[in-house]
Length: 253
Image (tube, rainbow, N blue to C red; front, side, top):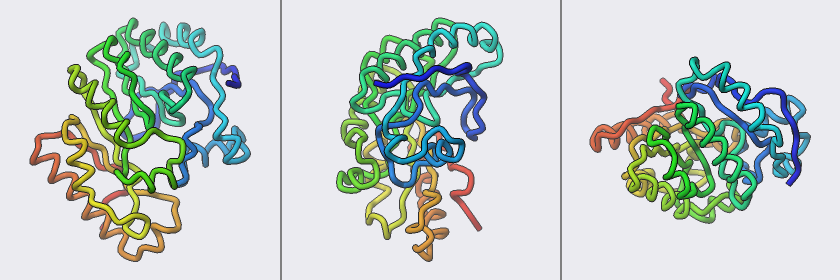
């Protein structure tokens, strides 16, 4: 696996439900085609010229060394660190990424810093040995494998993701699910209720619409659709006493 070096690792994220984040890999082999916002930003700022280049991830070789320095400076300001916002900490099929992610979580936890994890890969059961303050999540926008192969070609299968999250939930950890970016019916005819039932064990649901996609714009009632789906998520969570967050811009007038 190719490597790069960086000068900084921890930074304050602008994402509405985040605090600090760490992106210890540049690029992502999952190759999501919604399109991927992280890839769009990487191309804009010259970190990846093509989709193919983005799909060849590069590990930050000096991540742990930098982290040691930054933890001592920032630990009093950090409420939590999310792994990750512009890559995947448990990139499917990349043990090198998994091992570095586990070391980062261990190092942060040893400094009494909470970690929040989100993946389209498989959450390793080794996470169960870390702090119970940590929160573990998966992204899942469908249960249909044909849809996954088209839009998330190199990710873990949906049932694998759910099973890995359930294992950590059963081990006593706070678990969450990101149902984002959610597609419109002209992209896939599916039931949001079935997805919600499949992850009903989770403690929190985040829901957000799909952006930057021509097929969404082509669906004339996309605003009404996302309003209805967001309402369904809210009703499900309130009925089942789950925490929830609806992403900005999902509900419109």
